[in-house]
Image (tube, rainbow, N blue to C red; front, side, top):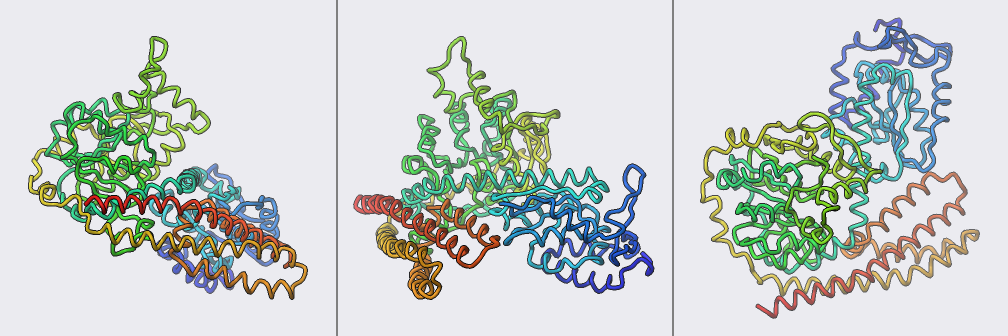
Length: 639
């Protein structure tokens, strides 16, 4: 771009924007910095004194990215057309020269943010010479995606999960989007998939928070008395692992797994344990994390599990953990440490898994296994069925089967019940398969996780959805290439030398739980004193003097609730919905364009609803911790 078409402030403004970008997104800043000046888009002056650009479109025609007369006025019209009510994330297709980005940012209420897709680095470099976006970039109210790299996408957007779930608005800047329509479509598809993933993850977290905390409390006896997974760290470096999941394609290869015993570390999910054991295939590890009591049926009447190491998240139902006859390790859990303290509760953990298959994958990576081989990991409805034959749900259906109702029909009925959330995905063997939003979320998680580890990952499922970042091959080929040598038996010797039940920490655990129960009582008392004060304040919003005098006591009590951090966090984890509602209310209030009295009323309503939820959560949590304490005392007395 020659000097005749360079804005007078171009270089200075570019450096100003780039300083902000280096702080907010160094990877993108480095790539934009590598764009030569002569690669930038030629600019033309407009009548208003700003700049526009004429570009060649893919169809050969030329078009202006912005008005030749007044790009800023045009941008204001664009921004005015975007619905902003109850939205906190604005996904803009096309960066252009940035005028519409800045105009839209002015309209966004509160701490909403803009996520912009723009695959052209030269265009981004040019835009940063035209419009001052430094404050938006530095405060991370503007995030720019240039491709669909999932690792980077998740890293950039993870801090915005809650806002994305509260409301995302997709917007298209027509002129700049037309420049690279296919590339924008790929990036927006990745963003849409992330939104689905985020929504499903947060909904699951909120809806299961209470049963999750209950299971953790009930599992404290085993949490403190069984050894952690620390003794497994990198124990199987250089050995392959096979993750055995219960997808329908497992039927194709299940009998081949017997030959891999002792030549690969077999990590099975709990739903696959029964079909494996029925064939005499004893895995080395089994994973569990499901919160529902029915999970215990996966382990009923399966045979001798004394040689199968159960690795479970503490949120798994205690009915499984209590009755498991073999070696057990429970993973690190922040809420468990809140209850008993870091000295009693600290240990190694793994990434929180969405499913038992994710947990098995994280375990294999923790063991140091390389490569990691997937079997039965369909993540889609291969053959229009959910599971491999022989899983527990098939036994539950037996009373309903007859000549008019087969297993296959029951499986298909289960799939079509989810018709509103079905979608098609690319199959690993070609073509397309049906999956649903939940399985698609699991696929999204796997692709992100696989991209983040150094180990080689093989998809030997021979069916199901295509999993990006994996190498597809048959199980026979994977076995021949990676599982030829036997594993040194000494690597399994820890099972004979480890003490799997140690009651020495039980008494101290009981003392810690008793303290937590007392702290809960304190939280309830504070909330009970606060709630009538909110009623008073609501009547005083038109009397600032009296309002300000009374709010002093409210602020003192509010501070006490938050000062007792352990109790507050403990209850907050138990009542995730309350925290989400408060977060949503904060976003809504921050965007209000109203007088101070009305704002004060909205804040009072928010605080009253939240403190009510905290009190109710503490009241509901108290009997759970009391029962957990009774379990600890019973276990202590029996030693």
